[in-house]
Every structure is written in C-alpha cells, then in structure tokens.
Length: 274
Image (spheres, helix red, strand yellow):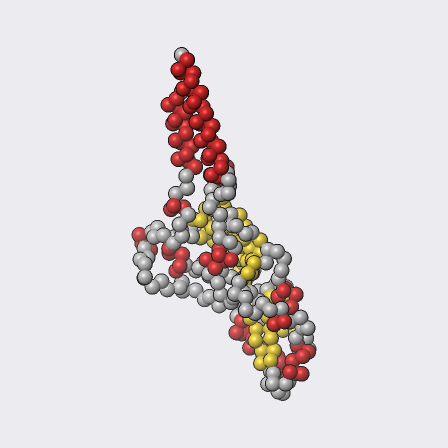
C-alpha cells in the first residue's frame, strides 16, 4: 500500500508539470528551418498591404491653408480632439473605442459616406489607393488645394480562450505583429497551448482558420507573423487545466501533496500497530 501511494504521487506530480518546451516562444523546432541567433529573417513573400473590407472603420482627415474649406468635412468631436493620436496601443475590452464614433465606417456595399462628397467606394483598395480616390473626389469639389489623409482607425482584433485579457482589442498602429497582439492582450496564461494558436481571418467572401505555433522560431518568416484588422485569436487550454487554473494550480498541488502525506502517515501508523 505504501509503495502504491508513492507511485501514485509521482505519477500525479509528473503529469502536473508543464515542460518549458511548451511555454517558451521562438524555439528552433525544425531542423529544416533552423534559425540561429543574429540570423537575418526576411518577411514571408506576401503582400502586407491591408485591403479595406466592408464594416472596417477608417480615419479620414482634411487639411487646407484655409480652415473654412474643411469645416464641413470634420466632426465636432474629431479624433484629434480626443487625445488618442499619440497612443501606440490599447485594449477596447472595456467598451472604449472613440474612433467607432468619430471614424468613417465602410458599409456592406463597400462605400464610405463623407459629408458633401457623398458615398465613395473604397472597399477592395489599399489605404493609399483609397486616399487617392477620396483626394480625387475632393479635388473636383474645390479649386483650392485640400490635403486628404486616410488610414485604418487602428487594428481591431479579438482574443478568446487562454489569454489574460479576452475580448475586442485595439492597437493604434497601421502594422502589428502577432507578438504585439499578445503583449497588448496581457500575454497568454500559463496553461495555453502555445503550439496551437488558431487565427481566424476574414477574406473576400469568406473566412479561413490558420494554426500558428508560437513556440517555433520559423513563425518570424511566416505569412501569419503580422495580424490584420478583424482577426480572431483563440488559444486552447492544456489538459492539465482539469486540475486547476494557472492561478490556483500550485494550491491544488499543495493540497494533493498534503493528502498524500496524510495517507502515508496513516499507513505508517497502521503498519506499526500491526
């Protein structure tokens, strides 16, 4: 009986341990794609220019030497008056998303409606091409020079599963990596399956699910290194979560160890009486 309890305790502790290989980022996991430290890693040969889609939000600013020319094109509570331009990142899980109220939303037909200019189709275009199209429209409206600036109103993405912060997040940049998204979401929990991050991405006419291995250094050169607006990131928990979460796992193991010690004491006392 004593040997059985010792063996059960060892098995339980062994099954409760999490290997560093399962939680360490950017390891060399594949000999064929081994990447040494200080080695230059080029980006994957894909076009990183984001294509605007219906339901995206864009920020459009107008500027002119004559301020009166652009008064009718801006909102009274324009983003520059909200003090968020200097922000490099931030979450929106608390419901604070000022650009949702002050930006220009692209409707389901791919059109954005601008005061005085009416509806302009910009879905399916890059930021630069969309800016040129709006610039051409305003050039027809005014003889004087009016400058247009158009950009994505932050990168919105959603985190689900084993993230320390779940919900809709925003990074106020025009380009962000998967690790920017992780850091902006408060990192992953200890029990997250970092080798199986599911990235759900919208494409023209549908959605695809991609699986990413955060443990593998080859990720730096993969097409999924950069996130895009409207991405959904989902992390599954390890099976060890059945014993406890990352916060109470130590307490759970301590309780189990205490119970095993009590059983051993009882066994020793019974053996001594016999």
